[in-house]
Image (cartoon, rainbow, N blue to C red; front, side, top):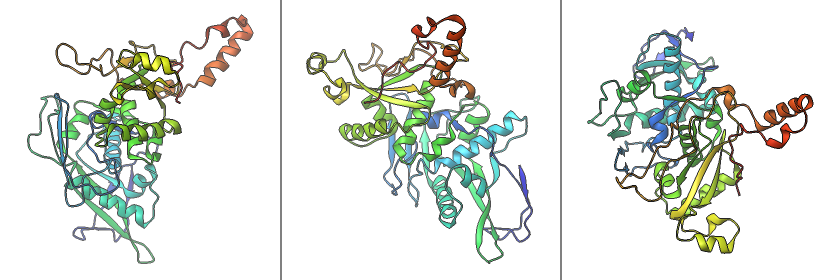
Length: 381
C-alpha cells in the first residue's frame, strides 16, 4: 500500500482535496468470486447491450438489466476481480476490511494489461459507470444468514475519481475510490467464496474465452477434468446464439488452445442415438452427432503432484434428467483451491524427474508413464 500525497489532487465530483492510502496488488494473488465464475452475469460483447438478460436453470435465477451505458461487460468485471483481490489480501494479512476501497488507477491498468494512455483511463471510467448502473436481481444468497437481495443491486454502490494535473496541464486519473455492493462483499468476507486465477486471464481477448476460463477454473479444481454437454455449456456462458454457431466459435478457441492452464476437447455422447452412425463413419465422432449430444471436456494442461485426487473426474451434466428432474449430479468437489506450485508442475518436469530416477533404478520406470499427469490423453482436434 502506498500514499499519494500530490498537492493539487482533486476529486472529480466536487474538487475536494484528499490524502489517501492506496491499495496495490502488484505481487499478490489475483482472486475471483466463485458465483461470478459459475453463472453468466456479464455481457461477452464489447458492443453496447441494452437488452435485459435472464438466466434460470430451475435452481438459480439471475436477471440483469442495463443502465444508460449498457450492461456491464466481462472486461468491466476486471474492476471487481481487482477489488476482490484487494479485500482478500487484507483478510489474509489480518487487516480490517471495508466495502470502500482506494486504489491507484495506474496499478489497476497495469495489472489488467490495459495500457496507461488516455484511452485506457477513459475506458476505466466507462467501466465504473456500467458497473454502477447495471442492475442485478438473483436468488443466489451470500453471508452467514444466507441473505438474499430481493431488491435490485448494482455491482458497485458508488465511485469517485481523483484527478491529478500534470506539469503539462493534462488531467489524469490518479486514484479511485469504489464502494462494493453488500452482496458481493459478504460473499468475499463471510463466505470466503474466492478462487485464485491466472493473471494471463487478462490477456484473453474474446469474451467467450474469458467465460470459458472462468468455468474451467471453477469446475476443474482438483479433478482430472470436467465434462459438460454443449447445450449446458452454452447456457452457462450466457450465449444466445444458435447452438451450431456457438460450436463454431468454441471450436476456434479449442484449435487455438488459448486458455491459461486448461485445454478443451469435444466428444460425442456414445450412448446417444447416433452412436452406430458415428462408429461406421469413423473420424472425429463429435462431428456426426446432433449438437445436443456433444460433450465438452476441460482438463489441466499441467499435472497435480503435491495433492492426491479426491474423486473421479466430474461429469457435471447428465444428458437426460435423473428421476428427480435434476440435470446436474456432482460426483466430487470440483472447485477446491490448488496450490500454485501444484498447478505449475508440467509434464516435461515429470518426465525429466522420471528419467533421473531411471538412471538410478533402471529403465523399467519409464514404461509405466507419468501416473500423476492430469490430462486423460485426449488431444484437441
